[in-house]
Length: 374
Ligand code: PLP
Image 1 (cartoon, rainbow, N blue to C red):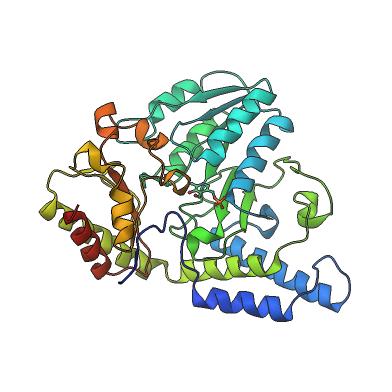
Image 2 (cartoon, rainbow, N blue to C red):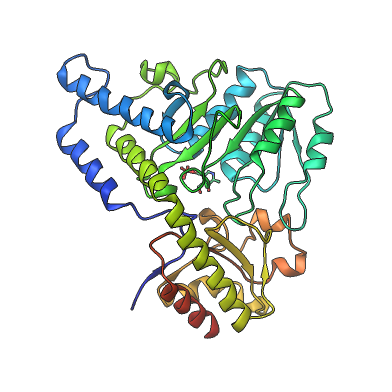
């Protein structure tokens, strides 16, 4: 049976060149970057070249890139330090953020005397910018946390516009860019966002490594304490092979971006056209101009199909998702779709199908065939 992976918003296959780079670092460059001898200096060199390479892709300075263990850690760090150290008293976010943001904010609300406000979300999953402007009229030290590309719907936030609004209102702006880094151009000189985060496994790099972009002179303080790594902002011996792999993966993502984006966009259009033929009553959950590698659809099936649809597809070797990965396999509806759909529609089966350059039209044909047999 041919297996079909259509869940790249959850994680991606590592590129062979990345595996090669990581294997080389593991085999040959095992020094500790903090050691002063030649082994350490060699490791430090790889570390700093990786940082420079990542910074170059995003048009930031190398010192603004801080390596972390994942996107979740980077989100936790920024939000917690903003409250604890930058004395932010109020955070504006939305109910469609990733749990790495939402649950962090709930914890911070319990621990500190902060106000958390949720900007309105339209039925198509778009963040209501007029409501954001209204919320920002309060004179409190505020941080806005809104994700760039939604991991469940693929909806895109206009980063440039939100940055401008935040600047006008003197608010800090953090954006979870885990789904967009490596998949779209981000110029951090042109877009003066304060903080963004990334996770290597979303752009064909290894799991267990990510980074935060922290704009110069932000005043952010560490989450935990120990060694002087990452200028004391993130203690712990750096996972050199992971970091080198991440830098390689990001470089390749941007080298191939134009070709991959065109190819993947065509796959998405093909899937939509096939759904229109086979299931004309299907509905896209999200905006019509969503991100090119994610499609979330409400299928015109009865409610009793909801619980078994993923299982049925899995039996046929097809991997898709019902929402973010942590929610797959549970009956609990996605917290993102819950903000967008009626109670009635929420009970019906919705699928998130997400692509990479490794997919083909054949994969989509197999998905459509499998859906027809349900
Ligand atoms: N933020 C978004 C938007 C994501 O999609 C994910 C991954 O699912 C994360 C954060 C968490 O990233 P990581 O798996 O690196 O902790």
